[in-house]
Every structure is written in structure tokens, then in C-alpha cells.
Length: 400
Image (cartoon, rainbow, N blue to C red; front, side):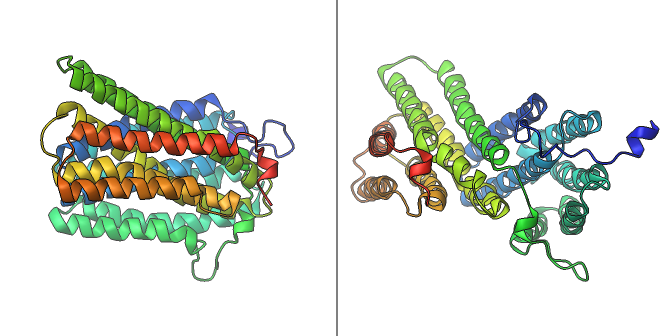
């Protein structure tokens, strides 16, 4: 036991060839967030209103933030060390409580959600400071600043959990604002000052792979939701067509993200002189838009499966057309970091989707199924364009 409390640090070995490896325990930890994504999708589907969208967005941003901070932590910590593994298992339990509380977070489950979130953020950061030990004074100072910001926001999360209604929403918006401003403020605190992005010497391969896996989780969960919804329906030509459209759009989203963007992004961050900045901008922030697009797309697929015919309500239109637009915007901004420009294919896809949405808004000619098929085909065109224009390019040829 003495060796556990007098350790030199639980950091990964920078000289090891496995420095950026994603370990099985990290993937095991991610399983909790598969459930969280399901909860978020169902919560939005059951309350597809403006207040419901605001609530779901806030909860999604909280879920993403706690997962992302854990990913940054395991980028430095060695998951093969027993204390690190135990910490991840404790985080899994808290994450499960947080996920279970999502549907009632703005009701009876508010305090449970807030307490689980604050515990994960503050508790993990305090553990990281202990786990670093004397191995890296720079990282200890950085996480000390992070702890100050997260503890302050955590108090606001708890305060919101103890209140109700709009007061809870106001507390949580303020808390989330602090959480999201902190990295851009480089965790500045009085006396201690601010961190430098060059201090965040992350392993680019690890960060890129972890975020790619989260996108894969979201896409996989989209297929699961589609399959479980279809299973409950009567098999007709319309439901089969809706299922096909849903699968087609999911495959197209996978292709758009993984065909070249993910690989090129990995190469870019791995060879950057300031990988911490790219990890913050490209992965911590821009991937929010990508994952949100996938989650909202799953909601749209479920709506179309349940109601393939009839009039397209405004909320259906916004979800079915808005989800792929959101996904393309996120991917385009992410790819611009490594390619230097917003892909033309994504701009054209954005224009086509916007035109489809405007046409439906003016003419009301589409059924939900027809609208879904049109947006899926638009994504397929973007995917095919990306593949054809970039299939001969290697990452080293596309990065200056």
C-alpha cells in the first residue's frame, strides 16, 4: 500500500511505442455513453419542442464534456495502472447514474444528474492531480487550474439540481457556460495565471482515435434505434423504404467522416507543433457538431419510421433536414483544419439540403418518407464526391 501512495506518477511512457494506444478499459468506459446517447435521443423525440430542444442540447453538451475531459485525462494517464482503472470504473458508475437521470433531469432526477456530473468532473480531476504525482509539475499546475474552474461550475450544477423550472435551467446554462469557456480562457485563475496550449502535449493519435470511436458509437446507436423501432412496426413497403433510407443515411455519414477526414485529421494533429490547440479546437469543440448531427438524425429516422406518410410538420422538417446539415457543417469545419478549406462537396451538399428544406416549406409536396429519401440521397452524393475526389490522396499530400 505504501508504494501506491508514494508513486512517481501514473503517466504513460512517452518513449513507449504504445504511447497513444487506446486500451480496452477505455472502450469499456465508453459503453456507458452508448446508453447516454440512447437516452438523449429518446428524450428529444418525446419532447420535440423548443424547450425540449434546449434541454436536450444542454444535457448533450454536459455528456460530451464529461466524456471529453476523461479522454484528455487518459491521454496522459496509463490505463494499465490499477488505480487508473479503478478510477475509470468509479466514473462508469457515476456515468450510469447520470445517464439514467437524463429523461428526468429537468424534473425529479435533476439533483442526481447534477451530482453525478459534478462528481465525475471534480473527482476525476482531483484524481489526475494525485496520479501525476511528481512526474510532471507542468501537468499538475494545469490540472490545478482545471480543478478550480470545474469546482466552481460544479457548485452551480448542484445549485441548479436543488432548484426547479427556469431557475434550474438558468443555473445550468451558467455552469455549462463556465465549463465551455474554460479551455478558451486557457483555465486562467488569479495568481496562477493561464495554461499554454503547448503545455497540453497530447498524443494526437490517441485523441483522434478516441473521438473517431465516439462518432462510431453515435452511428452504431443510430442503427440500433432504427432497428428497434422497425421491429415494433408492421412491415409495409413504406416502413421498409424508411428503414432503407435510415440505413443509407447512416452509411453515408460514416463514409463522409471516415473516408478521408478522420485519417487526415489524425495525421494533422500527430504532426502538429501545437497538438493541444488542435485537440481543443478540432476534437473537443468541432466534434460536438458532428456527433449532434448523428444524434438528431437518429431522431429523424425514428420519426419517419413511425409516420412515413402524411403531412410534414415543421418539427419533422427541421429534424429531417437539419440533422444532415448539422453533420456536414461539423465535418466541413473539422476538415478545414487539416485541408485549409471547407470542402466543396460539403458546401454543395449543404446547398442541396437547404433547397430541399425550402422547397418543402413552400410547397408541402413531400411526405416524411420522401423527405427522408431526398436527404439521404444528398448525403450519398457528398460521400461519393468525397471518395472520388480524394481517393488518390494520401494525408501527407494534403497537409501543408
